Amino acid sequence: MKRSTKIILAIVVVLIVARLLLPYFVLRYLNKLMADMGSYTGHVEDVDIALVTGSYQIKDLRIRKINGKIKEPFLYVPKIDLSVEWKSLFKGALVGEVECYRPELNFAFSNNEQASQTGKELDWTKLVKDLLPIQINRFAAYEGKIDLVNLFEATKTDLSLEKVALDIRNIRNVEEKDTRLPSPVTATGDVPGWGGTMKFGAGMYLLKPLPDFNYNLSFDNLQLAKLNDLARKYGNVDFESGTISVVSEMAMYDGRLVGYFKPLTKDMKIFKLKEPGEDRKVGRFFTELLAEGGAAILKNQKRDQVATRIPLRGTVEDTKTEVWPIIIGVLRNAYVEAFTTEFDNTVTFKDAVENLKEDYKEKREEKKAERKEARQERKEERKQKREERKEARKKEKDG
Image: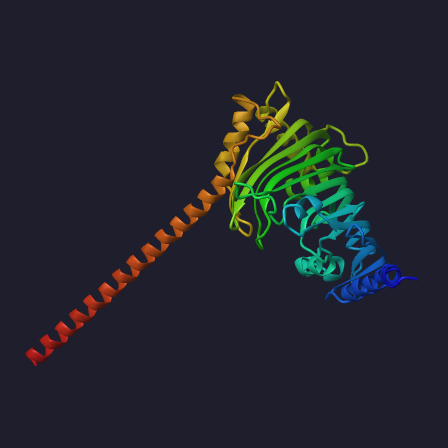
């Protein structure tokens, strides 16, 4: 046997052995990495590696909260495919793409730490970097599910999204685009039990701790009766029938945001003379009667619709709105022109930039006023001291 043949055979044997042993070492590494994540822990059942294509597959990844009361893991993904994004490689960028199949996210909201599960304690950026050997430029999820348990804790109202499809592209800005928001994001999902659907579309800049974005979001045809726990708690009414759709546009730049929410109710019925199976109190009876009357006055008769537009402005921590635009919106929908479930297309990323500039301008004016006030105070102090010295000299002279 020739020497060159022996070398080739040796290389082949080494590659085969490496192929057989590598998944074991990777699996062990991943499980060791996720064993201790503070109040959370993780586990991977199996790993499959394809050396030729530069990809590998993670099977049955689970992340759960330690010492929590919630049975469901915070995150469960039956299959994750990780591979090199070849089209970016041809452009000279070594980045990857991730595809998750049937992922499940289980959020729980509670003031009780053991009953709460939000994942906010985890450093997800670090975890993703540790799990994935290269930077990710595309992320996709198919047939996902998101459960929001106790979303409104006071009423124990839950919300779930199913058949969630998510696609995020150009995360690392491999494709140079003449825009501040180079990463397109799309998401869709069903709202089971509520009878509605969700659609989301956005342009984002994701290479910041708090990303910039300009999004369109809509929830269509949610059943109003599903909001009865909230309606009873905060309005002392409940809904007999009808649907609500919510349309929103929002833009954010450097933490400052501007946008609106547009809720539209259709075929809403609040009051019913007799509600079988419920011991309705007198107060609720008259509250619902007045609410039904008010809705009849304020609804658009042609579309049987009550709607308004709620403008928002501020920051993530402090978002503000005004009452008068909301009231004017209700009257406009009723008596001028009915709102539609279409986007107004009145919010742009430029608005968020201008909002930030206005905020800086306001802060400059505030500081200017503070400096002026401080100067005035110092001036008054100097004047008072002069008067005191003058009075003291006068007394000395008279003495």
